[in-house]
Image 1 (cartoon, rainbow, N blue to C red):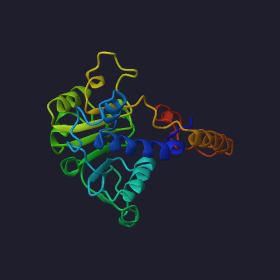
Image 2: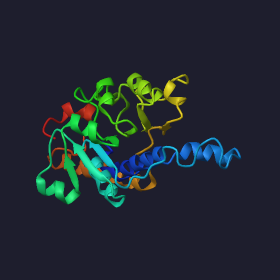
Image 3: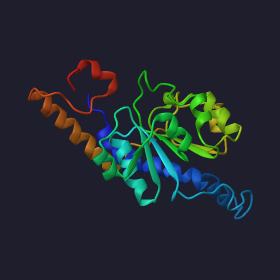
Length: 237
């Protein structure tokens, strides 16, 4: 019954920022060129290579993971925007250094849009063709939540047409993807295999969360960190 969201929040947050940097700094392309002996060939050194400092990073979802992302982005001197169905109190926003915007305004304002929402009826297909069309030219989409939050055909079209700078994706609608999936072939996409959460440090946190839940249920208390698919079994949690 214990989801890994609480245990993995730091790991997923760091992974999201890693994907932002990998897209902005063209890490995959540079590595491939250097490994192939093309030291300064194939990619102009300053073509569409950006810094996080001064950028507007829009977080969709400000739960445990989104909050950890916001904390880390402050060190990069980024301006952090967020949208969440439940807005934080003004004092919390000030403490985290975040600015609330309605979803459409966030999509139109952010240089990077990073997804930190659960998959449910409200979020399935949330980032569709209309949402992508609202995003700024040269914007970046980061997804470390669930693949089905994004309509992949619409994302592929936006990337192929150059309407987005790139995407960093830790999750896809089908995992593993079909070998012919167009996202696997686009040069402006960085992919990881749904690996944002597991780390050496997070395993200990997972076990502690699991045992804490057993103790809570044994004491007649509702469990915490319930997997969304099992939430109907624990309506009071």
